[in-house]
Length: 459
Image 1 (cartoon, rainbow, N blue to C red):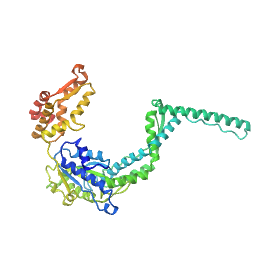
Image 2: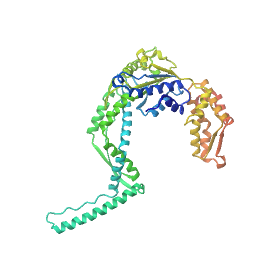
Image 3: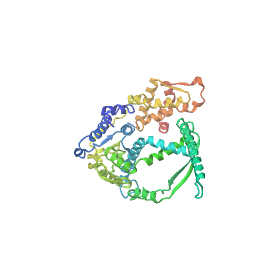
Image 4: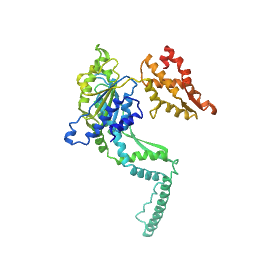
């Protein structure tokens, strides 16, 4: 991934409005990963990633920035919720499992890359198998020892003619397959699966043993052979996948996946403010400080055992995010705070931000609803005053009630177009153009937004 920081920010701007400071920080962090790969090996070991902590209310773009960043970079990426982990000894997920999930993600990326490299050969092999299914090879009868030479010669000539005829027919079928003339022909595919029992990995102490049990059962479990009928089109995809797996080296893929996760992996830890222990140490709060202690060595750099080998987290980039409504970043463990040297604050969304969110991004809500209604032959037109009215209601409701940021637009838009979505299939052709202006918005949203008891449930 060789995008410059400016290019990364430009790509993020296509989907996320504002929050330039956060975009610049993640862009520089990603570019530093690229730079580190190009320095001398002696210096490469010394350069550690500068982890980032995003601080801001819900719905302002923290998760979306991380999600879009992962799509851009193509690097191994996982998003985890800090609240699903508990201290070792308590019922819940062990923090080390996030590293195992990262390696699984890297494995998928490497496997896809390797499959692309062998795709042509896999397609060729799959087509040959399809030809064999559609036209099985003839079985030649074996000559007995007491056959005379004439019989052997006659039989040999017969086999030769049959072989030539068979090859000619195979060539015809191959051409038909290439032209897509046999896509709906049915063939029988035999697939093998192993019955592997489910392991209760959430049991305390069992998480680290999960991959050992899984690997053991995969080796000893019997194979189940099942015969399935499918079209040539479906069978081709199935066979290409089988042939690709046979062509790529499993050990090579696993080694590359571990290396990719170690050097380019990104772990996004959301809701990190929820593991700040409150003053009253009781109930679930008892394990929160423990989660921070368990998280510390992983962020600092340690070695985690996975089913694909040992994984070092020294150069994994960690991005943490939290609203920090009831807690402050300073209430985290000092050692953990020090491992997130870059801190960026994301701003509350204003009415102008809502207007931009509704119009600027490539997949904005207005464009989504226009595409949905177009399937019913309805042209949905959003006037500028209608968008401004929508933004105004979203901002006002956020101020009066819980501020959920841009997510408020989802509830407002759904309420606005609920009647249209219901009636759309039955509308007449002359009614196929619907204009959303300020009056249309006010008629459907005003009463609900004023009735606070009702708006709590609907908006």
